[in-house]
Length: 125
Image 1: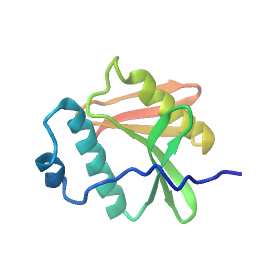
Image 2: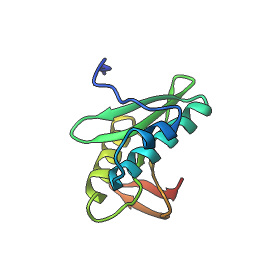
Image 3: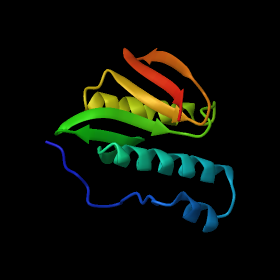
């Protein structure tokens, strides 16, 4: 049986200009801004949205019609510094929700690979 935590919560902004206006300009803001844009699009598509956290975190778990549809990670630039944490978070969620494939959304990168018999698709937003 799973338990849904009431907090901590992730907060997203409906107007991404507010993020830029109220923050210092750093590369980590690009990650947050891209994640925020993905959140807005998932909401527009009427998904219920959760995040998964165990040993690692997966940015988005989408559900529609009471069924888990996708596990999604978002990172502006998928590179050697974040590759392990992004993949581990995604694989953890895929294992937990019995998903055969997962998605890593980036600014402009594209690739496909198999890890632990799970298909991971890397694609630009």
